[in-house]
Image 1 (cartoon, rainbow, N blue to C red):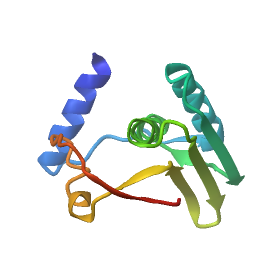
Image 2: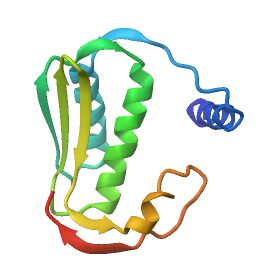
Image 3: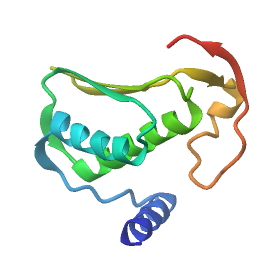
Image 4: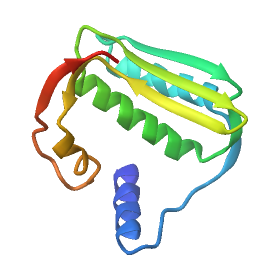
Length: 134
């Protein structure tokens, strides 16, 4: 319940242009993401979730925000991806920073829907088009 209320407060803060609170700490995203994906595997035992780590993923991060980001992306990949294909998470660290990729197999989202997809208060049936290789 607290997490839900915190999310609602964050949403309202962004609507008023106040931004969101971040709590930066020194940590390794590889360990953080490994833990989060293990929890997601437990919650979705019928799905295969893979993690590939490349390079140095240590830095100063808001771990809770990045866990939330990863959780949302992976759950979306599970819900909207092909049920018989794995969700593949790639975490790549280099001198420029860290890149997070979440890949799944399945139908693609129509280009017209992409502008609306991250609106937090909008839920629509997303139409999908032809299969693409990822």
